[in-house]
Length: 553
Image (tube, rainbow, N blue to C red; front, side, top):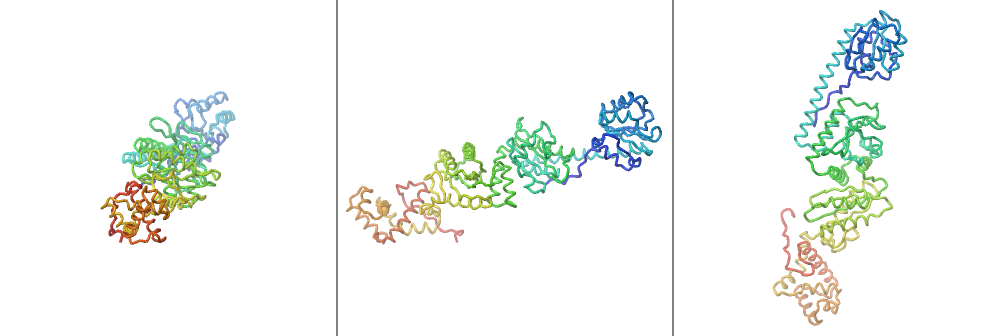
């Protein structure tokens, strides 16, 4: 966490100086240049010279009694021209000794340059004015230097310890007191910190608002909402920009402090981009997806605003969770999924959510079906990972229901038999898939052992094929002629083997109940062996049965 920032030290302006008691005692009146009173005052200069501009550097508030002013209008005009040309902040003239009202030529000249002209109707000690103003300016400069050092040290410390991009954006928001948003070139809000403001206020309609705000070459206030914007580069190429959002309830103003914080944050982010190689868009998608499926959001409107700002609109869309699961070796799985979805023109959150799984939140228009999109992704994935499982949750139309779609996809994925279908949805889950999901359960393993164990042992000892014979018989629904043909044996040989099976298992193969139990056991054995890597068509020796452990009890 960063320290709370001290109050922002904005430059002293002409208006600020006029409000000081030492000058207010002279009852100042602004004759012209009212709209330029926000000019910064770098110094106060008292002069009775007719050519004071030669001693000025710009930003000075000039104080004079008016005694040396020339009488000729042309010379007065030349006097003001020089002040304007050098960049004086304003001219204050005391109407006590020489004038009772400012000369018309002086007023016209100041008005033509929009130079603030202030008259004092009471005598003021100019030395007191300069001492007061200079003390304020010098104090502000010292504080500004101290503040600059604090900001520099804070971001240097964050950079040296390898702070994440999220931390850098959070630090910028805390130091400035304003929301800060990092976006890419296509106006997607990758990272943000709202500085305590409602997320919907900061990110609502982000892309539209962002596109209405121009991108300056250097830090500047831009757009209809007066955002403070600075470019962010990576290896010399601009890839995004950092935005500071003003408070909408007050006039948008940013001081030197906010500019400094935003620029230092942008520099730190550029360095972090070199250190953290993984694209930040992917990290943003991962965080958003996990927050949605785990319901880590304050409200549905905030969640929608966040996804909209990432370029994934959800209002009025059909939402579907898709999970791509591989046994090992993710490789560029996430990249493959992202590319296929992009080529299909589908909006989606895509993120690697575990070491073996990529999650997708599809957000498609209500008129577009998700199946062709998922099939395209599945084919590309299966081309590189033949045993990958692509599971699909139930379709929902509300962001608050996405967590349910995710749980559906997880259960479907756990039940799916690898390598059989391009993708699997709930309607594909039958008995075989259910048994596959339960394949590691002790109760199911024990059931298979009790039903078929003696048969498997007999085949192991004698090199027989009774298990395959039973499989053919049950698949033929008890049709012995069909079963014998499938096993390429005579009916008499089949009868003998079936009799041996009944004796070994103590079962009646004419019983529908016994057939059902044995069929379930054979199906369970098949999915267990498939998971172990044994070809399902060639049953191998009996698989090891997992024994109960202390965690099971």
